[in-house]
Every structure is written in C-alpha cells, then in structure tokens.
Image (cartoon, rainbow, N blue to C red; front, side, top):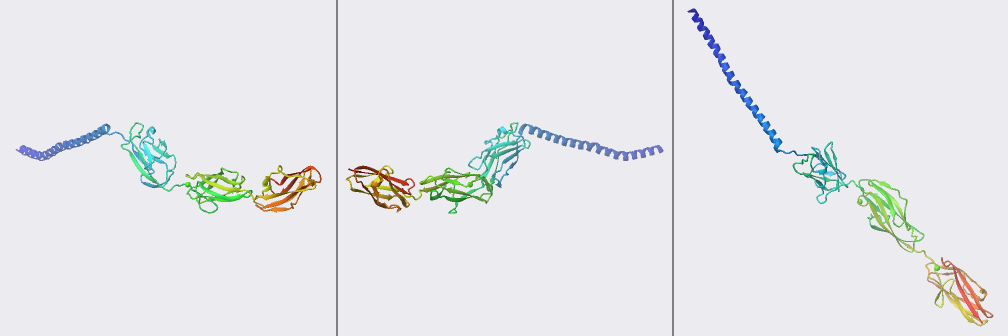
Amino acid sequence: MGRLVELRLFLKRLSYFRLGRFFNLVILFAVFPAIISVSYCFREDVLNKVESYNSFDAVDVPYYIEVISVVPANGTTGIAVTSVIAVEFNDNIDMATVNSGTFSVTDGVTPVSGVFSYESQIKIVKFTPASDFASSTSYTVTLTKGILNLAGESMASDYSWSFTTGLALQPEIYVLPPSPLVEIFTEDNYNFGNDVNPATKTAIFTIGNSGVSDLNVSGVTLSDAVNFSVSPFTPVLIGPGGTINFTLTFQPVIIPGIQNSVLTITSTDPDEGSFVINLTGEGLASPAPEIQFTNSGVILVSPVSTVDFGTLVPGDTGSMAILLHNIGSADLVITGAVIGGTDPDLFSTDFIVPATVTPGATLMFNMGFSAPAAINARATITFQNNDLNESLFTIKLKGRVK
Ligand SMILES: [Ca+2]
Ligand SMILES: [Ca+2]
C-alpha cells in the first residue's frame, strides 16, 4: 500500500512537471521551424529579387556616358568674351567623335568656329573659339549623341545649354584732329588747306583709347611721305582712357597742285586695326614775277628773238617801241639794261633803271638805232631782273645802213 501511494505521488509530480515541459517542447518545436521557415523564405525572396535585378541590368539597360559639369554653366550671364567652353564627362571620350557637328556653339544664327582639345586625365573636352565671343550675346552649346566614349557608347540624349557674354574687354581707338576737336572716323578726310612752298603746315592729332583694355599702337605711316611727314613715332601702349599725340606736317614739295596721302594708324583695336585717314593739301606756287617782252605784238624769247630796225640811210635814226609786261604774281624789278654785242654804240634805249613793274602791268620803252655810214649792225640788250629763270633776259638787235 505504501508503495502504491508513493507511485501515485511520483506520477502526479511527474505529470505536473512533465506536462509543463511537454508544452514547452511543443511550442519550441512548433514555432521555431516556422520562424526559420519564414526567415528562409524572406531571404530567398531577397536573393531572388537581387538576382532578378542583376540579370535585368546586364541584359536590358545599355551604358550611357554622362555630362558631369559644364563651363560656363547653364544660364550664366556676364561671361567673359575670352572664355573657353569646357565639358566634364564621366568617361573617356573618343575625340575623333568630337567636332563642330557633335559639339556645336552658336549665337542662334552663326556657328562659332574654334578648336577642340581634351584633358584625358580629368575627362574634360574644351572648345576654344577662334576669336573672342561677341559681347552681350547669348550662346547655345549643343552636344549630340554622336559624341562617344572609347567603347563607342553615347549619351542617352543630346545635351544643350546656354550662357550670355558680358561687356567686351577690348581696346577702342578714337582719333581727334587738331581742329575742330571732333572725332574723325576711319576713311574720313582731313584737309590741310593750301600752302606755299617752302612753308609748311602742321597738325597735332590725338589717338585715344576709350576701351577697357590696353590699346597697342604699333605704327603711324603715310603713303606719300614726300609732301607729308609724321613726327617720329615709336610703338606705344595706351591704357584705357589714355591718349597720345603725334604731329603731321604738310610740306608741299611738288607744286603747284593738290597732294594726297593716306595716313594709316596700326593698332590692336579689334575692328579698326588699320585706322585710315585721307590727307589732302594744296601746294600753291610762291608769288613770283614773270618777265615778258613784246615787239609789234610778237613775244620775244631770250636770247634768240631779234628786233630788226630794217634799212636806214646814213644819219637817220630808227626807233622801235617795245613793251615790257609782268605776267607774274609779284613785282618785277629791272635792275640793269645793258647794251652789248658787236656794235653797242649804234643802239640806244630810254629804259631807265631801276624800274618796277607790278603784276599785270606793262611798261613801254623805246630802242634807237643810227649809223653814220653803211653797216650791217648787230647788238644785244640784256635786262637784269628778278624773274627766277630769266634773270638775264637778252634781246638781239640788228639794223642796216646803206
Ligand atoms: Ca573699334
Ligand atoms: Ca620767267
């Protein structure tokens, strides 16, 4: 009996104890696989997704090269006209595919020409314009899918952007004549007026720079450097707002007449590199006397013309009126009237020296001839005067007595 009770108690304890353990085990073995299972399923799902993503990427999406950055940036303004355009790519570019067709720059009307270069280390393609951009102008840059990387791959689509330049950093030449002090422009005229030889006329000209960068003036030259001259000129740098002077001289050597010379100012002004001024001046002959004799309306030529008294009888006196004209523009002054030659004693004159004949005036005088016996007489009369090329004017004289 005692043993039976003990057995019951043992079983009872066991049932209490074991039953709890049993339920614990049930929970353990039921829930844990579920967790494992769910976890596993979740992991499988992720792996599947990753795998499906990887396989999608490799098969269906091509590789595209991309523009990382551009200079000047899109929409920027006030860009320097001397700027260079730069494009940074994400991959090495095949420069054989970069040209004005695949990398175009335009102001909307005219394509900008220039040179492409490449900095492979940083994957930057540069475009250097052949000349400065225009000032205050909008430019559009277009990169097409024709630009390829070394594997022949392109961008996904064309790439385009715009920027606007600012004021030009340029020199600007201007030229002022001495009077009136009003700017003259290239191809304009400047007239020295007229002048007489050997007098000269001078004119001080001013070259100024109204631009915003240095103006380099390398030369001032003349097409006619005989009748015109320029003060010694050495190349000079004129800063913004600065001026220099140079002197032009008109000294008519070839006179009379109008002389022309083209003045050329050579400088770094971008659109007036050869600044041209047409110079004019008139050389007038100096006022001068001009001697002229006439006999019976015939002009006498020194020393060949002859005044012929004809044939007289012995003891007679022949007389001949001669006119002296001044057809010049200054007083004609006669300082000598000398009879010479073979028979000077047989000829005479009433001409009184000195004599002054004003321009346009005429003076009449007489020559006489007389011989006591038969003779073929010859003589000359020479007038010393202030006509530059006829300062000794000689007239032949002849008369016959029989
Ligand atoms: Ca200019
Ligand atoms: Ca003369």
